[in-house]
Image: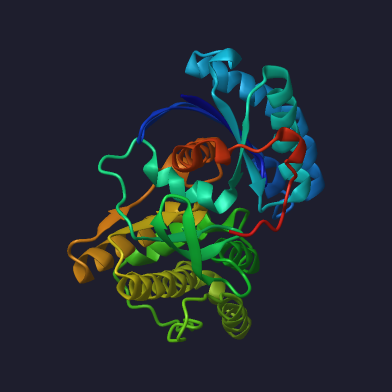
Length: 345
């Protein structure tokens, strides 16, 4: 079965083709038209600009994905598309395109939740596959969620952010320090500079909700604490790597602590890290090390770096597993498909 995946929830116009049989999946193409350079000059994503760019890029991106996969529209079994959450003006680009193609090509549509897409990035061409029950930590610019999966397409949100998501906090911290957008990679690079210096960090920042009885996150207070530190320290620019390290460590410590508690509580057999912040090398290494040290039999899955940011390969994979689990119930009449910027799990 071939599935065309489409994604346009924020500032990436993406299309991918997935080939699947049983639980075996293979990505034949994964094309992303990024808008990072455009939005960097504004310090963040401008919805109106993103929407216009999607309109220009989505069809050429689909055409390139089909050509790279060396298949034609007639070969497709279905079209999977991100329904939400995301920027509604951006979501509409892929959704309306998918509806038009479904009508012209006479193909069924599989709506996909964006967060579920991130989770299923770790199922792509993976052997062995994650075993249930699974705890998934999804961290990106818009999401910080801990999710329990007892089987395919059975999701329970056990923890979520109450304010800023981890990736959003990175971007805002970078802006405070006069760094460019996106902030995550820049702060990570500075933090690594301090890390390899082997110096002891003298900057203390809080770990919000670290010992709360639930699995929720809050990074707004951490962001404010960093701002106060910068305002009091007139020489902070000379110690920017140390500030970056202190900030990153606070986020990583919080994510790891909550993840370990969730794994223990729900006796998970597998752990999945997903989302844009999953590209952070310090988080990947420290999280893996501490999980394996505490739970010797657990399987830890880290997505390939190409599948951490928004992409259509993950949407195609999530769409396929929805079909694999639910067959015809996975399909939705294209006339009923609508963008939902606040789509819930």
